[in-house]
Amino acid sequence: MTTDIISQYKGIYIAMYSAYDEAGNVDQDRVKKLARYYVGKGVKGLYVGGSSGEGILQNAEERKQVLEAVMEEVKGELTIIVHVGANSTREAVELSKHAEKFGADIISAVPSIYYRLPEAAVEKHWQHMIDSTNLPFIIYNIPQTTGFTLSTSLLAKLAKQDKVIGVKMSGESTFELQQYKETGGSQFLVFNGPDEQFLAGRIMGADGGIGGTYGVMPELFVKLNSLFIGNHIEEAQALQTQINGIIKKLLGYPSLYGACKYILSLRGIETGAPRLPLLPVCPEHHDSLAELNKEIEETVAHYTGV
Picture 1: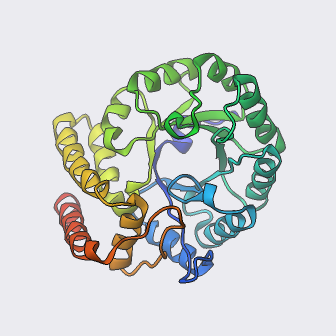
Picture 2: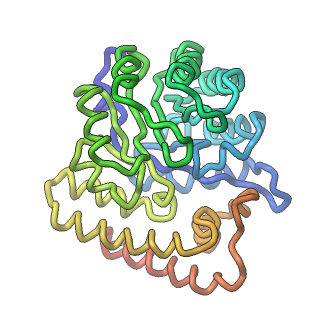
C-alpha cells in the first residue's frame, strides 16, 4: 500500500460486542443499533468478531450476519476491522473473502487456537488469509489465550508484504509492543490491546488501541488518547487510573462481557446475554452494575462536559 498507513488507520477502535435476541440467535437489528451507538463517540472504528464479539463462539454464517449488519449500518462512517481468525484455514479464508465482498476496510486474525502449532504452520495459516483478498491484514497477537507468541523474526518476515500493515498487541508486555513497533518500522501500525495499560502502550510506541471495555466508555479512551497526543501525561495518567478502577470492578463479575452488555442495556442498547460458556449477569449483580454505570456516566460527563 502506498498511502500513509499511520495517519489513515491510527486511533481508537472499539472491540464490538455480540448482539443476540432472547433465544441467543444473532439479531441484526440489535447489531445495527449497537454499531450506530458508537458513531459520533470520536472513535476511529470498530473491531468486529474478535474476543469481545464472541466470534470464536459463533459459526461462520453467524459471523457473516454480524458483519453484514455492521456494514449496512455504518459503512463509510467508521473504519471496520474484521476478525476472520478460525481454527480451520479454509473457514478463515472464507470469512476473509466475505469481509472483502461486503466492504470491510481491514481483516485481522489470531492463529489457530486449539493445536499448538509451530511457527511455520501459523505463518502459512495467516498467509492464506493475506493472499485471499486485496484487503490490508493486521496480525492479532494474544498469547495468553492462543498459546502462541508472535516472534519478531516472523513479524519482520510478514511485515515485508505491503498488505500486512500492523499488529494488535494484546500480550501484556509493553517491551514486546515496543519491539514489534521497532521491527515493523515507522509505517507499521501497532495497536495496544490490554485496556488497563493503554497509556503505557502509547508511550512505548502504540499508534492507538483496540479494546473491549472501550464499548462501555468510548469517550474516556478517546479523551485519554487526546491527552497523550497533547503531551498532558500527568492528566492522562490520572485518567488511566480512573479507567482502571472501572475495569477492576468490571473484572470482579463472573463475566466481563456479561457485565458490559448489561451496562449497555441500562442505556437502552439491548445485546442479549453472552453465549455460553461465557456467563450471563446474575440478578444479584444488577444493582451494583447500575451503580457502576452511573460512575462511568459521571466520569464521562466530567471529562467531556456532556
